[in-house]
Length: 559
Image (cartoon, rainbow, N blue to C red; front, side):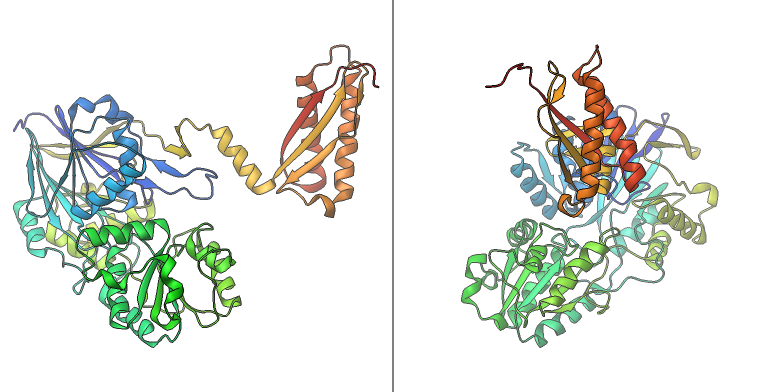
């Protein structure tokens, strides 16, 4: 190993946010990349499907990339892979078995061919010229979750991935002995999951959740509709096993739910497949012997549960004897959507269990403060960089590290693109690379102007007003009265006086413009927008997008 040069560690995504996790370690002519996730947009990005990490630096240095290493199969760690490998040469992807199946499915759906995926486990070791990469088993809400240890010429760098310390998990327990041995061998820099760094104590065991769900399932006399995160494969497996014990068949609804159950079957996590039935078979099963496993725990309007609540699902009609279970937490920003769905379910007479009224039907896959402290004590890093979280979470995690004996000057709260430099003398922050969020809007990626986002925000808040005109510039007159149409602004029939005022304003503007000797269509369109904008703001206080549609008729005679 070349020990004279420095080693660089930086995030392309995952700092100051929950999502699009992507980290890189670089030494001389080698780069290893860890995870490649997406982030789901908040309300301030209307029309955007995903937010990606910025791959520009990797594209500029793709000849140095030795491989992409995946900690586990959640979207915020693998969702960006289809976009990455179509833009950057990634020679090989190292991923756990379940993550590998999820990645393959994702690539198949997009008709992307990529053959070089290597399945890793806890015994895998990958050596390059400057790096040696190893893995240690962690506990999370999806099977096959690993932390990653990277030995560099300037010391060991460890990233936990997403983890919790569950002493009674549904799957394998975290490998405490290997984690402790890595710590004993010496860790220069630790990057650790900060998602629940603000929450005291230990997280609830998944086993306690399974007991609570088991009690509900055993005591239900009618049909069960259970909504949970499709990515929480351990919970899906347990629900299926519990339903089997209680003589219930399980029918999955929602694309991601169906896909993840198929992956769980192919990976051997679901032992008895006879309990699973197709959607077309549910009418053959008595309600007390049926559980519908559905997507839509966050109130997503197109997901299965929302369709059921709205009475528009072609397969499922809600019945008063139904029990609906939300086995999920509320993702920030989704509370209103979830409440709408819950209220509709209550109105239809269903019994509803949520985390707000039944405490043990969901637990997070991310460790709380005491688990983060335990990890810090086991790893014993010289330097610490909290990762995977908003800045308040990173700040809280850095404080926990200081409580555990890491000097404040050895903790680094960074932004995406900031560089940490490892040398034989220690770790320091030095410079940064430019990082921009990359938007996915349908098939369009990247160059989505801020003006487009701004217009979408205006339309979502204040609507759009369309003015349809037919003018005759030769005769200098309107052929017919302006037609005013709105979407999301006002209801035309209920606001006829306002619509009449807007129509009269347009007629006055058109009359003034048509008689000008230098009349042109562009000036007319711009004048209508300008005049209506100030007029509508003054009357209503709202700013709809104004779209004039103008047809010119140059005929001088009519039959």
